[in-house]
Every structure is written in C-alpha cells, then in structure tokens.
Image (tube, rainbow, N blue to C red):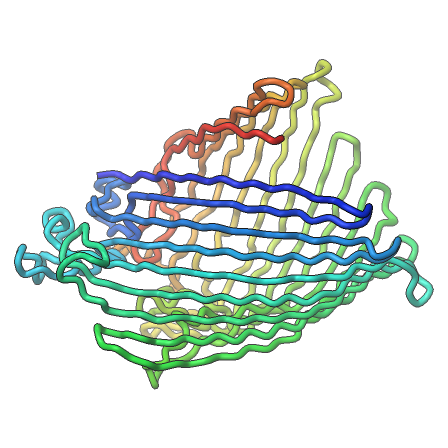
Length: 510
C-alpha cells in the first residue's frame, strides 16, 4: 500500500492604475488537495522493512483553501507614499487516520475483533479497526496599512516607514472516532469526541527610520505586538462542555541596524533586535485542566553581522554570522519527555553559526546566447544548545544539542540558460545528522520516536521550455532525482522524506 497526492492550484492577479498616482493590485487563488498517506509515524521495524509502506490504506487528507488579497497604493507627494494590504483566507481541512503516532491504538471495534493487542497490529487488523477524524476550518482576515516618507531629518537623508496591522483568526477543531477504517462524520456508530473553537486577535504598530551619513546608514526601529487568544472547549471526551480560557501577550520589540558601504563593491552590516512568538492556544492552554502549565511566549535576542560583496562582475559573495539567545524557547513536548501533542518551554537556549553564499556567472566566457551560473548556500550552526537545567528521566540536558538543529546545511546549484528561454537547473541538498530529543540519544527506539536522524543528500532538477514568444512555458520539476530513502523526522514516529516526484505543467503569463 503506497501514498499518493492529487493537487489543484489556480490563481489570478491583476493591477489597476488611475489618476497617475494610485494603483490597486488584486490577487485570488484556489488550492485543493486530496492525499492518500498516513500522518502517524512508523516504528523502526516497519521502516527497515519498507520505508514507503503504508498499512492504513484508507487514511486520507483533504484540504481546500481560498484566498483574496488587495494592495492599494497612492503616491501622496513626491516624498510620501501610502500603501494598504488587505487579505482574507478560508481554509478547510480534514484528516482521516487510524493512528496518530507509532504504537498508537486504532479505534476499537468489538464486532470485527479489533480489541486488545489487535489495535496495534496494523498489518493484520487495520482493515478491521476504526479511525480518527479531524475536520477543521480556519478563517483569517487582516489589514496592514503603512506610510513611507523620504526626506531630511536632523540634517541627514532619511527614509521612515510606519504602520499598523490588525489580524483576526477563527478556528473550529472537531474530533470524531469511527468504527471502520473508511468512516466519515456521518457514518453509523461514530462518536463525536472533541470540539473546541479558537479566536485570536492580534494588533501591532511599528516605526522604522533609516538615516544616511556618508558611507554609513543607521536604522533604529520598534514594533509593539499585542495578541489575545481564547480557547473555548465545547466538547471533550464525548461530553458537552462550556469552558473558556484566555491569554494575552504584549511585547515591545526594539531593533537597531547599521551598514557601511565605504569598501569597494562591498557592504558591511550588523544588527540586533528582540524576537517574540506567542504560543499556540490549542495545545498550550487547556480550560479544563486546572493543573495545566501554560506555555509562555517565546522571546529572544537576535544578533547578526556580515558582508555582501561583488569583487567582480561575475562573482557575488556573502557571509553572515548570527547568534540567537532564547529566554524560553518552545519545543515539542515529546522531545523533552512530555506527552505527545504538547509543547513546552525549554528554558534558555542559544543558537550561533555562520551563513555563506556565493554565485558565479560564466556567461562572459561562453558563446553569445548561452549562460551558466553556479551558486551555493551553506549554513553552519556551530552551537544550538540548552543553556539552563532541563531534567528528563533523571538526566539533565543542560549543554546538550537542541533537537532538529543540524550542524551543516548545504544547497549548491548549477543552472544553464539559453537566449530562447530554455533553462536547466540541478540543485543538490545536504543536511547533516540531527538529534530527535533533548537527551541526544543515538540508538533508535523501537517505536521510532527517538534516536538519531541520519544525514541525507538528494538532488533536484528543473527544466523550463518556452513554447514561443508570448506563449506558455512548459516546466518539469523533479525532486529527489536519485529516489533516495531518508528520515526527515521522528516526531510521533519515523517520517520518511519524499521519494522521487515529478511535476509537469504549463505556466502562462499574459
């Protein structure tokens, strides 16, 4: 039993201009997915037997997404511009699966013998056991107006931008248990187990001002974030409920950046800013659990220093050093010994490393009409560790490496272009080994949920062929050209990277 995906994606955009100083850009898109795959991870034995096996032939994932966006801009004067971004998105998704993670029990069905140990005997009993249904709907709406001004301030050339943003979300999450593998919400014998709604309102205001003084520029800025989320439990464990819990987060996020352009063909830059990420309300605060430990917002201080250089017309180089200090980083609860589907603050953590990039253009040495480009991006995370005490199973993880923080990531690419528009590109990817838990265990667990995630490398390819001037472009994209088998995650069990996949289509801009 294998996996399969059917995807439909369409979109339309246009720009209206009037009055010589006003414009309105409108975009609309529709996305539909019908996938046959299981979301529960594999255990170690199943992975070794067949990495692409799927014992749950009736597992399905459906998704539809409709989005609209409008961007209005008006040039108020030679130095002042106002722009406003409006957006709306509706998303409906439904997941039908028999197991949530490796070792999880399927829904019991005494009439077919799906009881006791049979509920985890996926190979023999999956067709006889029930499933778990998670239909969910999401509505997003927001507006983001901003004002941009250029002129003189304090005797220096200045660029200032200021704006506000309001964003609202309404989410409905339901959970049903069915008695058969292909059960749906209206099937006989289903149990309406859980239902909760989540409302989130977020508002932000910001101002950023860039000053130019000779070869230097200085950019101070600040952003104020306020997020209010409400988790309303309407049903839990097949019993009607009516409980609400609300959380508020307010944070001021200052930042400062500086650049120096006095070096020939190069720009040096540095910056520091505060970071903030509120917790997910669905998993992180429970109105029905008086002993629940709400997850606090993630806060960080971020530093960077680097250089962008163009030493020759055919060569681009870049290097950036970074450090991120988290006060209370949010991590998956399973990685620190907590139950599945929870999150936790892991205390102080630190990430530090280096990003390198380069691109070479060999067109000058080739016959007219032919171009070859060679590029690469490399990230080295030299340090990604727990900087405070975090005891799991009697072992302190202080100093251990953070889960899913590979030390090396490399993405080279080679591209050929012809003057007719024909192009071919090869883009390998390499990711070094990772740990899946805070104890940095190497040996794989029997359920596949912990152990090392080995390094992997794949090669992707893309071809574009114009069918004539002003006509559509035929494209072919192939990922994992060598059809390699590799692990990308052990969250809830082993998840395998996608096998060789090819996408063929036509792109037409008119």
